[in-house]
Image 1 (tube, rainbow, N blue to C red):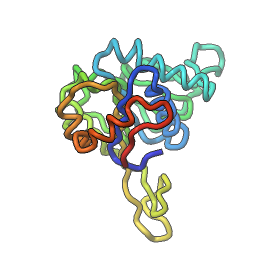
Image 2: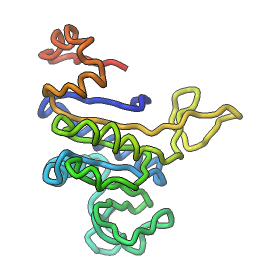
Image 3: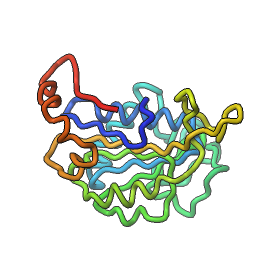
Length: 218
């Protein structure tokens, strides 16, 4: 998994964007339960009908995680409601769990739409996943979302491994607050400029129709 602070997955339909988003989120949910995350799409409709639908399919298929239905202790998460008593909640106690996914291991994920990005002010998270940002305003991502990425507790050590300690053997580790952007191709100047895509136009064009390789840069 990338150790870059900002990551772009720009690809067409059926390329595996949602699958990757499901794996990335599952990794943090499993190994960094105290690190709050956020998953957003451009609109609430996109978020519920597409983004979360696909991500939850990955959670179920790859990890066996399904939504808690009220039957004893079966189920790994709840969405938008108070977690059941057997869920770990020592790290959070919100007045309302609207727009929050709570997991039985104590992890939580905020969910929201980027067309109403001002509603995200005030929250603090460690990692973020954004879907279909080709339709999103630049300030929603560069100012609001990146400004929310300030919860400390995840680090990269000198060997490039993720850890939860500020230092290893007396050597300070680098704080890590990653942002993952998954979107289909479009003419979006601010995304192209942010990732310097215009500098690699020729190489991108050479690989864009390949069935065996793809363009990537670290």
